[in-house]
Length: 318
Image (cartoon, rainbow, N blue to C red; front, side, top):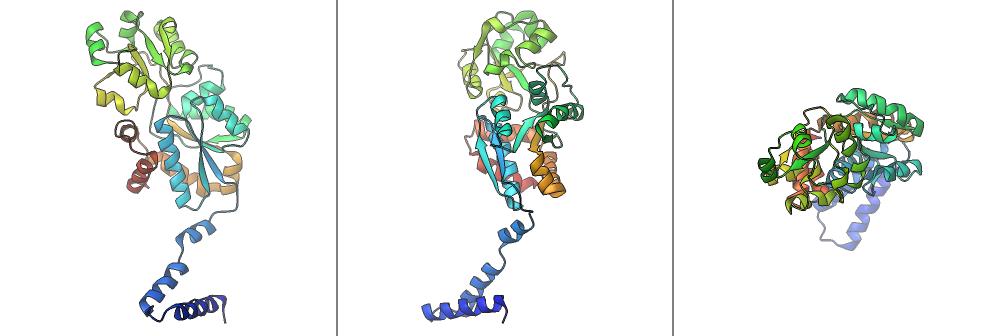
């Protein structure tokens, strides 16, 4: 007698002893439910290897993208968790270095310039920028997978009232008319080449003396309360359109290719191979800037949970 038959006989005998009222349909249903466990089947297809720990920084978009990759990988049978990090990239790099995380949804240009000490290698071309990024990731035994179409750069935003009052539509206008305005943004704006240093280098505008350091999530609130004149927000922020604010055009091409790009440890890639890489690349390839903006709106404006937002996106796209 096979193991499967012995198990089936044992289950049926136990059910008969417990109650004579259990009909054949119920017994058959119970056996069928246990015989075809999709989770077990999917898990068996994944090679034995390290659990995947995804690093998520402390803003909504990072939480959402981390959930998208997590849920899709879990569905495919991988063991996955999310590790919450602070808002600064050095914490993420340290987490990679000490093995706390082995996967992170990143941004090509910003990560490149962080690792190269703001050497100015990032361009507006996502492929070229990701290729340059890889030269620095090699030293850390990390790999940048395919960049997404979705782009999220730093952006400089003013209220419609301020734009009308001064006559602001572009960063060139800001350089000409806005030297006395107060800029609010995250702490790294003082060293980020796509923030204060970039405004100085590309537009000749120095706002360092009028800079107010804020948590990333507090910038929009400060702008809405007129506590700052110009806010540094992610270009995919749902607040910009919802509030009717003006995103100043980057007319001198300060901002580079901050496409979403998954960064993964070589250990994970070497263990799980082409199937893993293809799954992650397919997810990235399905994400657009417009969709990312809408997902952020659901998080920032509608106050929905990142878990639910990611699940809805996956149901439509995966």
